[in-house]
Image 1: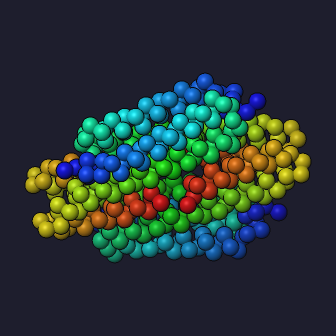
Image 2: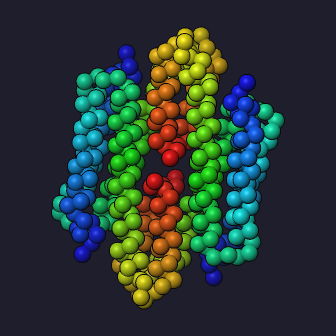
Image 3: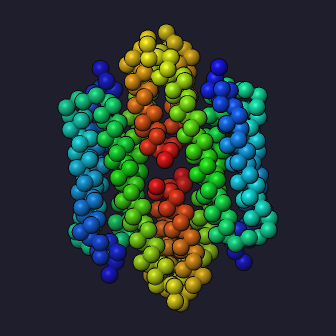
Length: 92
Length: 92
Length: 92
Length: 92
């Protein structure tokens, strides 16, 4: 079972919170709120999406590469783990 | 008039496209599409938000700092322009 | 006095540590160390440079925009402060 | 043979150019050049390191995951290719 199916409920919650943030950007623009408010919600939404992408990528590496390769191809499993480390330093 | 009000229609279009991408992430998760499809739409959505933030930041710098300071405080206007350059290298 | 002159000693220390990291990348390549070591030192060096750029940008905003504009042009000073917040969320 | 050994000469050239950029940051600070020059060379150096990391990561994925897994484990090879796409959108 794919990791995005296994974690469907958790990921859907995250995506709905992000949609709430996108709606907040729309309201700030519609209501002609000050640009500092627009900047703030856009930056926050970008951070949330960064976090979502980071989580899906880590799960992708673990469930499609590290786990299935550990037994059969330890070198490839290590190479995948090293990628996970580099990616983690990106999605702080 | 704030830049986000002056560009309200254009920014609202962009935000609605982003919401469409967020909806696409939700559909991919709901329909239990493969994780590669989820990865792809999340990465695309993040890129779009990056672009939106980059645009709002550049307008913020131009309309609140560079334009009003050019005549009265050219050093501060130059400093703001230099920031715009650094930021631009970030929001490619 | 420009902030990069005022903080010359501190910034030079940081740059010399970064050069040490760049030298470490060179040694890892020269000595044909495993690619995981090369990946690790390159990712670390990039993080250090990100931090350096973040610090210089924040000082640039404070000393050329927020400080000099506070008294004369509070709206512009606020706009600069808002930029500092957005940038801070970038250079974690 | 590891990809960083196979591409040793090319990667060493890149690292030496980056060290030249780090030296340029040091000179700009030592000579008390204006902060806009320091900002400019730091941002440029960060971009070069980003590019180096992107290249080493792509080679890492291709030579340790996609190539060796293609024949034996096509699902894992596809998962690795999808990672390469996401990473590519990062290291523009």
